[in-house]
Image 1 (cartoon, rainbow, N blue to C red):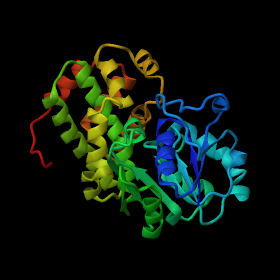
Image 2 (image 1 turned 90 degrees about the horizontal axis):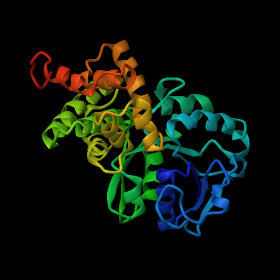
Image 3 (image 1 turned 90 degrees about the vertical axis):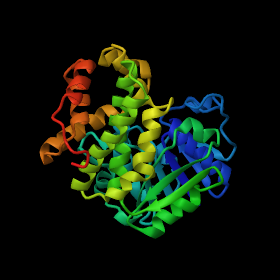
Length: 331
């Protein structure tokens, strides 16, 4: 089996290590420049050597008819990369190629889930698309610390191929058919993670963060069900599982970004200090727009949006959330 990973960031690199450990396929890892011509360790994973069976490529033309393509690019780089790939698609892909989206966010150009964009752009069979999501900090996966993830596809046979290709003793893959729910959970948890970071930066404690996660999950469920997702998906790995690790985890960029905002840094300074893409920023903008269009009650998302784009004081935002009209938890 031939596998190509688009994106040699921390997550793409960690996936290459999982596949290398399994030794059940040939692996091409695409990086956009020639960095790896002079380095034998991963750029975004500290002091981890590139295995001999991981082939680094820096040109899309070097992709050789893969059975599976893992898209592990920052969301803002997916559209330009796929635009270049489209011209080559007849040469390097076939109708049976499985496309696995590993990026957690929305397409900023079309304001859609990536499954919709990919299917339209390449005219691929939706049964060949898989969304891969769950509590998987790349740094821990690279160290072979056990975790679990979900591979979601409308086709059980397609998700099973990905499940069997990736699974091993430290990386357990489940299958799921709710692509909408898995993609929404993976994107929206980044917004709540920013909010959690803001609370930490303000000096609030575990009670605050736990309450925030609980109420944030309810907002994600409201959005997801309106867009056609199965409510139960959000209690699984791609929902509550990923939300928990992103809100509490030390490796979360969105959480770190939020902490800096809560500590008083402005947007530009907080973002530049992270030095990598903070996916929750674009997700906040898009989800805010969707919630307004469908009239979905998402007060946490609304306040995060105001902090990010209207320069609202985080303390005022928290006070407004706490001072809202009292209500039943289930509503």
